[in-house]
Image (cartoon, rainbow, N blue to C red; front, top):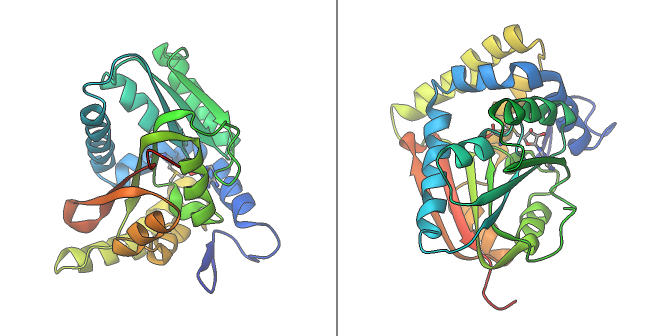
Amino acid sequence: MTTMGTRVTPYAPADAESKKEQVARMFDNIAHSYDFLNHLFSFGIDVLWRKRAIRILKKTFAAHHGSLKIMDMATGTGDFAIEAVRMGLKNAHITGVDISTGMLEVGRGKVAKRGWSERITLLEGDSANLPFDQDTFDAYTVAFGVRNFENLDLGMQEMLRVLQPNGIGIVLEFSKPQAFPMKQIFGLYFRFIMPTIGRMVSKDAAAYSYLPESVAAFPEGSAFIERMKNVGYTDCQRIILTGGIATIYTGRKPRQT
Ligand SMILES: C[S@@+](CC[C@H](N)C(=O)[O-])C[C@H]1O[C@@H](n2cnc3c(N)ncnc32)[C@H](O)[C@@H]1O
């Protein structure tokens, strides 16, 4: 892991490859152990956090008639998209986008196994340059993705561009608990226990050191809300989850742009 100013990348030297290339390589490397380690490290709480985010979507579109077009940005192995279909998000077609072909390959296997290829499409794509027209989606979700973007503001702008007017963006991301004892427990667990186990199981020494460093560098809370407003989101809100380990941010595209 390398830290250059506020630029945190998984591997050194940081200037040999872009952050995007390093992040894609890292997720390709860990794709086959990602789901296992994700659920193990979070004791399954990550599933509850995604469900919470999907309940916000269901509530938002409770009175909506017709089908919904949803983008799941940084979809990885497709867990958000799969959970949305499983929870019966009505008539939704979900397009998952990711830069890691390895993660997408695992995700496509999971979608096919469930017979949901008609409901979920997984595509290779970069948050900085999305292959969609503006005003395409009713909503987007992105879980544990934005802190990996090479350019956070550009990614947030691109996701806003492809949202329909009044469409909603939902960002789920790790945050740092501020209060005793969660702050101390989380610090110990995230900085020492998780990287050690992650290194042993995933065989990628850098990936699980990059995780706490990228969380530490992420502009969370009110700073992230400000970033959302600055690139054009309205109605920005946040919900703090599990003592501050994660946060859901929501924002809308203005009705008139
Ligand atoms: C921690 S995983 C999260 C996967 C999934 N959303 C989940 O909840 O399990 C982060 C994902 O973000 C993807 N990613 C990172 N930067 C990206 C970018 N610029 N554009 C698209 N995907 C990106 C990575 O390839 C990786 O699959």
